[in-house]
Length: 443
Ligand SMILES: Cc1cc2nc3c(=O)[nH]c(=O)nc-3n(C[C@H](O)[C@H](O)[C@H](O)COP(=O)(O)OP(=O)(O)OC[C@H]3O[C@@H](n4cnc5c(N)ncnc54)[C@H](O)[C@@H]3O)c2cc1C
Image (cartoon, rainbow, N blue to C red; front, side, top):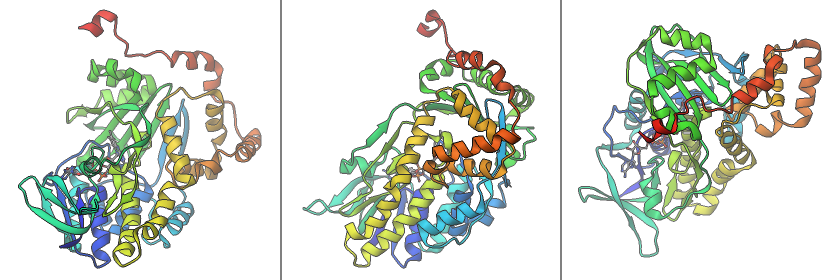
């Protein structure tokens, strides 16, 4: 009999397992995969995610094989903003969520999942987790009243526990077996294609947006650079018809400079891609069960936050589960966790990402906002913090702040070239650049 069985052993599962054994609980983690192995992900980690790696005790191990940097470049319609999440805002967030700010770091990194997930699960095992890989859960064991009390794997082995944690990803078996429905689903999302290149001298991550297309470039493991492009799902089928050609076409449409650099580099792996990043939420817990990570909620990765949020939720959930198993009734024990996960900021940020994921062309006033931020480092940093859910969306985009920014910019900002021909740029960005003729599409 275990205190907890965790189904899924990657970002959410390995982290929740580690936090639970650190609280003195007996934990079994199972995963149908064998490690090291990859999952579909572009694996960029923002400073709060890197701070969680530090809190888990694996940051040095990750940094030994992964390049890191202290700033990012965010370029919207050619308006370049370079900055980083302010340490003070990070500390505030960790204190509000976890009651302390231990392990805070302002580094950024992009770590391949076959590396990260192996480090995480080995760390969990060192902490005291029992781990079974290659173990597919095929049934949940329940009491007559419906309370979950264990799992049965594909080979017919049954294990029992006081709580079963579903950390088994977007297609969560645990959620499906329990009939936990998705809600607030947002089907409009981006398609994304990426690969890995040698010979790109890039020290910091760059994130670009032009028209309805996005592009990111980030240094990663093995001396390689990950290059990613994305766009609205309405264009996905046309893009997919010629992935390599359209990948380079998209880069060219977003930035000549990056397109030239990538064209001169050597691709080391095949293209990876996804057409489905539809967002959803699910209930967090019920009798004998808790969901964490993508099993509980997912949103488009245009802000690259799934890993970071999985670490955050694993730590929050472990604290609540420990209280519950320590004798506090489930609703009370989970209430604080639920408030942090489903509070006003969480709802506003979910909506922010889902709206971005529609990849509508940036409006004139939005580009203006980016333009007036130039030269105002404090506000650039606050914008980046807002974009990645460290500062509340409601504060940065509050009209009083936007008016303030405009006032300051009146004295400091010059007009950006993007406004010289904004109408043509805006109209052109509505046209699908990957469109095929009817005959091509039918072939
Ligand atoms: C295209 C794309 C790009 C992304 N880019 C980023 C990014 O740049 N940065 C970022 O932070 N996030 C990114 N994400 C999101 C991130 O990958 C996920 O949020 C993260 O992997 C969630 O971790 P998880 O542990 O919840 O689930 P997963 O990583 O999906 O792990 C779930 C595990 O459960 C196991 N499992 C499933 N069913 C069973 C079963 N029945 N029995 C046993 N085991 C089972 C699976 O084998 C798997 O190992 C991206 C996602 C996508 C789709």
